Image (cartoon, rainbow, N blue to C red):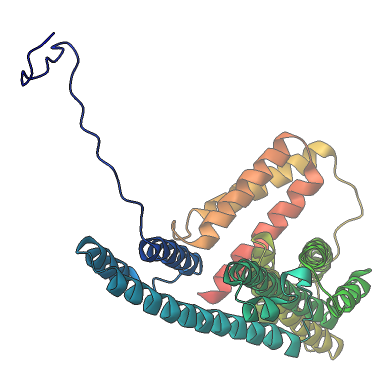
Length: 372
């Protein structure tokens, strides 16, 4: 037994421990923490709207400093003030964005676009009135995305329709057959006047418009090529020194060039001018003012060997004329392509196509010569 007053022995192998009791947070601190979380959530909501303000960062920092110094009531007052301000500013921002989206919808409605946002827009004002700002933001962002998509789709369709109408009017002026394109265009317009357009219906209309434009791009070149071949036969009746036909040959070359490069409006315009020029030539011819056409070719048919020999001589002669053109000119490049094509056709004994290619090249060179 240890003597009284003797210090108690401690076990050297058992470490001594000190227990720190953490005081529970005060009601003010708990409320401040809740408000801080709410402020951070609201600031995240603002960032979703693509804005850097309203912001409560300064108030959060000031409140944290006040809490650290034991001034909990001051921290709570700062946070409450920031919360009330942030809610007002977010409500103003949401109302502004809702108003802007409505104005964009009304602007589209005034030009005949009546689309449906469905459940995306329904009840958004009530949600805002009840303070459910997160739900309002989600609805609003979805509505803005869809309105922007409608605007983009509508603009794209209007661009397609402008191209279709332009080509259709020009083709109609020339009397080119367009098949069912007019009825297709009318159907597209009817579908655009529907009262509740959706993304899917607009996409279907865009596909129909693109298909109609493609049909035009297929129908017009075919008709123009046929007409240019008929005009070529007419122009071949006149000698190269015949001035009015030289102008027509130049227009013929321009139309062929535009057509080959897919420039349909320019090709249509050149064909229109070519028509007028040929009409003037034929009128002059009917009045006896034009030189007589060349003597008709003998009815005796050439043998294949004779035709090949004649076309080869013609190709060599034209190739020599092509070499005199400025090497960097567009005419020189196109003429060289025609010579190569004619050569390949002659090699494959496609004499009819070769003859037409060489005739086209002759008209091109004649038109180039008339410019000099």
